[in-house]
Image (tube, rainbow, N blue to C red; front, side, top):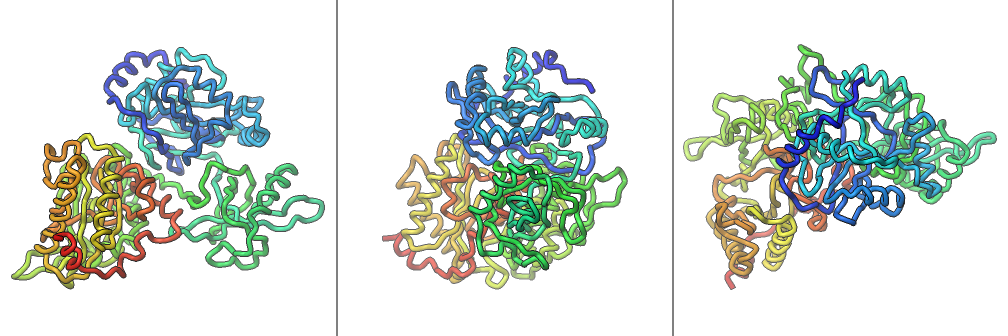
Length: 634
């Protein structure tokens, strides 16, 4: 194996950093996550690193203000004083560093047990921080630079650093299979592969992959059994995983891998969480246990999965306090398809050219998009069914030519009908979850819907206010404008619902009983926006166009006209990163960070954590514009 030589990167680093835009350091940053795969990819273009057996750590450096965060955004600065002091001593300015903290054993290998012992005993001076990326550095946003250029910038910075606690993670020029075999022989957990030309994206992305030496993943601890014979603490831990709908299912027990100290320590934690409530949606047969609230996360290695979804030969590895129990699902590796292999089949649909990249920013392939729509199809269907539909297709990916289609001509997509007659233009209608997947196979990325249904085409059953920020508008201003728009709608007595656009802004949706015609509804929305713009002209503008919106938010009321459509809930957007339009609760407004915070790779984590639909009252809302329009004119 040949180590990447940092000394050769100086000129490349200078040019790359100069090309990156200057940017204000964000207060928070979500990390890029790796996708589990079955085998290393073939061909060039990949860089490899050791898969550390530790905790992910992101470091925000703003002058003398240095803060250390876990992958979930928890501030651990006070827990690692020595590391905090060492990073501050290095003299970096205005940066976000991404890496992994570990404790090394006598052979120089990362030991998660030693790391846990360090935190349990509050003796964290031996913690080592391996830095492998820099999304922001020296006041510049490096996220859109290729990985090889971000690494060059880091390598140059670390040339002058001599620290035992803060080190640059080594990159290797080697083929994946050989490197994986070497890592497994050394007793390491595995390796991480990264596409050298890919940008940094705050999501789980196929441009970062993880390859493990053994099957190993996190499980939710849902109960424990009594100890037998002379054993203390407990007998075994009952393990669970979340399904797509958020329910817990039984995944088996683990009763080995504990020492006496762990048995006693874990038993104390379990006792504090004991409950009479059985956490599974369906109680597993023949299982007797003491139930606990599903808060703790255990990392477990095992031999294989059984046909009924349980693990065989499990061994406890550690507790993971850096992982959210609500987001723990079964890790399923991507299929490693050989050249010429048969196409994947998703929901009965053959996916052709699934390996083709459709978005360079995230590394997403056509198959990734199809699988996303398969996962959300049932949830998305009520937002599409029985409405005139428009499709945005990208046969060459989002960087190529996009086609906006309200009718399909000679194109035929199973489950999508074209309706029309003499008195109206042809319209598309979709009525099955399988049709969503079939459309994605035909390169459809965006699904847009009309404001009326097929039952009453001339009578809209919703009003949409699309908050579209102009150049120079901060996200804080978008949130403020959204809150003020909501306040006005509340004063008018109209129930309203919030969702991200999947792009730059947010959507407020007002459901209606279909009584008024399009002209009436459009005029009402125009009057609302005109009132906002006249009352708060520094924040709002009622006219479209880039020059009008400079530094202000345009609340797009034009979308309420006849024939207009809007990106539906759960639709991906044909923009870098493949953001998704996501329904929100109003209580989330102040917490979200952008209109594209969720994308096709990370939305499943939000869905897994949800306990209820934030739009559960939408379908049952009955209201008209008559009283609201009267108040607006008063």
